[in-house]
Image 1 (cartoon, helix red, strand yellow):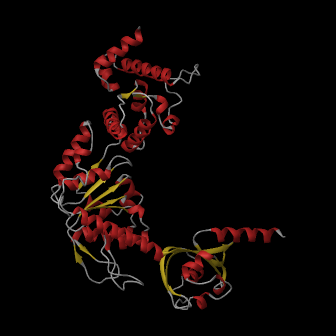
Image 2: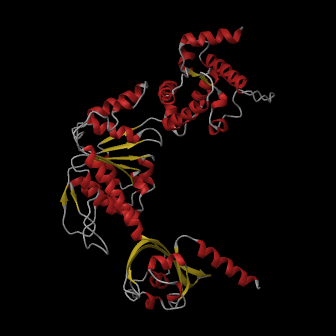
Amino acid sequence: MQLTDMTNEVLAAILKSIDEGIHVVNTEGITIFYNEVAAKHDGLKVDEVLGKPLLAAFPSLNESSSTLLKVIRTKKSIYNQTQHYVNMHGNNIETINTTLPIFVGNEVIGAVEIAKDYSRMKLLAERLLDLQKGFTRSVGKVNTGKKMNYTLDDLMTVNSGFIKIKQEAAKFAKSDSPILVYGESGTGKELFVQGIHEASLRAEGPFIAQNCAAIPETLLESILFGTARGGYTGAVDRKGLFELADGGTLFLDELHTMPIELQAKLLRVIEDGLVRKVGSSTNTSVNVRVIAAMNEHPRQALHEKKLRSDLFYRLNVFTFSLLPLRERKEDILFLTDYFINMYNRKLNKRVSGIEREVELYFLQYLWPGNVRELKHSLEYMMNVCEGDMLVFKDLPVMLKQHLPVSLGQDEQDDSLSLRENLKSMEKKLIEKAMGMTGNNINQAAKLLEIPRQTLQYKIQKYNQ
């Protein structure tokens, strides 16, 4: 077997194994590769398409409407475009296609199309809307005393800055103006937004949350605004999230992942309260408060053109920036105690706290996953611990891997003892703080963020 033949066979085997539809045509519009997944999407058999003119297999298409033929003609790629057509058996087909020209040098020799089954994706989207609709009905029922949503009081903190943010949120909750929330992943954005909803005059109305990154771009518009019967092949009258959230709050998370074109339509809805379903020529009035959140800084998203400036300034009536856990040092041990008590009740345990070395490590660790990471770490430790204190061996593997190599380790000392290294690091930090403040205990305690009495005790301990 020639090397070229072997390469072609290997390539064909790889393409056949891919779980997306692959359709390749040459410059004459003849199909030269067509896998089983594509055939299933199109309601055809491979041999009905392979080796035949594209327009013979799909007679409803023409030179202008076929994405494959258009790409060959323009030499430009097309990404995530919905295509509706009729196959040779008269069946309606809907796919989402990415179509790319195939170059050899500077010459186009054909085009390849990667297709996803749009009908299946629509079905999943419609099921999501049905679930949202059922949830909306449930929250609209008479309150039975069982807690449905979180309140601002559920955001546990002793940090003065975060307490001020909560107080401002409770005050602004009474307004109907849109809100923009920025915070790293794990800082509690959805809990914070639910708290605003519960403190608002809309508390009896629905609260609907949608992560914009969780839905394909091509479906997000119909999810948000709904569809009208006949708007496209197979379309039915269906309410979108704006109509489902009427009288309540719609929370749009990861707003910066929403397509720019769709952001323009969102802005119009916020401005005039009118929703137009996909495929409809009429508007529906809705009364919805929009709260959006991002895990990127809005200014960065604006700079990278992920966020429209006009939408940003419309949402920027009230803006909240949730502090990461590393900037709320006093909350680390406070939340640790809170979660330990919570898991004591859940797991029927009697853990009294964490040993001092773990406490020091928790205070030095940056917690990139914020409160969510702290909570899940403690959940793991509570499940594996064998005593009445959480110790270093109970730490999750990921936390152990992040332990700094230089943590209290002398350059001449190869000891791997976590206990001794942490003690050494603590001593060095105290010495540094005392040196920076001219041995002023009050000022050094502030730098170390510990009580003055604790610092005095530690100085005496290390001077013995």
